[in-house]
Amino acid sequence: MDFSQYFPIWDKLTSSEQDILARSAVMRSVEKGTVLHRGSADCLGLLVIGTGQLRVYSISDDGREVTLYRLFDRDICLLSASCIIESIQFDVVIEAEKDTKLWVIPPAVYKKLMSDSAVTANYTSQVMASHFSEVMWLMEQVMWKTMDKRLAAFLLEESGLEGGNILKITHEKIAAHLGTAREVITRLLRYFQNEGLLRLSRGAVEITDRERLLRLSE
Amino acid sequence: MDFSQYFPIWDKLTSSEQDILARSAVMRSVEKGTVLHRGSADCLGLLVIGTGQLRVYSISDDGREVTLYRLFDRDICLLSASCIIESIQFDVVIEAEKDTKLWVIPPAVYKKLMSDSAVTANYTSQVMASHFSEVMWLMEQVMWKTMDKRLAAFLLEESGLEGGNILKITHEKIAAHLGTAREVITRLLRYFQNEGLLRLSRGAVEITDRERLLRLSE
Image (cartoon, rainbow over all chains, first blue to last red; front, side):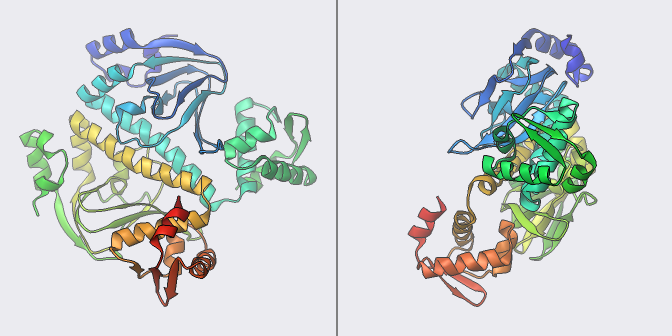
């Protein structure tokens, strides 16, 4: 994999900026389950994802989780470099949800680049705006939608990511994505099963009526 | 009021950039209740607040509201210029909560400045990061805190803003700030009154035990 193909504004950088980036970006392979960033003490750097999937989530004092957004091939992870933007005053956890290949750009290198290059600074704003938009979407979901609709939308999203109707995911995991208790998810899944929308088995959920699940999610 | 005193990065701009800004920034006085921005169709420009107070809120399809954050003297309002950052994919309403004097910088002027000046682009990132942080704070409140704690925190915040123990605010308004139904707020306020934390009268809430309200909010 060639870094220059994955860094979206590569062609807009000067050749000396390209040199600096190419020299500093370090390719890493991380296994599914690896925690790349936890809270504001960490500042690994800007991550450029080659292939894989990261989950960015918020965690409460007593360990409850809610997924803020996910990052996929060619996405940029900015919050792993939150130390370079001092006004970012919140903590997240960033975890590889699949085996992932990514480049790490050290925070000091990226910060210098941002301060010298309006192109990079504006690009960083765009990345932040897109993460901000994901969180606003979630906020609106949480504020205005009931959990059954959010669960239906989540199952459809998962099915899109996994490319099939059978989702190998526990009720516990679903609860952590949606920021609720396992019991709530189990109760809703059983209700969905009774309605013929899906079939439950050990460690898996099979979608059997995608059409109605979609209608429910809207 | 002198614009240069209110624009935080004024001294870091070149004199030609300062000229452009000084020529384009238009001072406006807006009355309490004026809606400055509603949804993505609007793009008034970057707002620099001289004195006053703006409320930035999200609104559901059926008209329910939740306050995202407020802006005060010398704050910058970026979402009123959301058209200049295309990755901002969400809608908010921005309303003057008090009579407000502010400068409007037209979106095209600010966009040009951002694209030429790394200083301005990085400053814009910082402003966005601080708004993003406010929304993350709210998200965490909504996810992990019960409404009684959120109400207690809101009453204390309001009391801080108004500078006294008597808050002239309706239950309806409080509900719109917190994104819940009026009935929920009325029930909680009555409970707080029974507990001796406050006293209710027509159109007002008087805090009578600030200490315990603070403990409850934590």
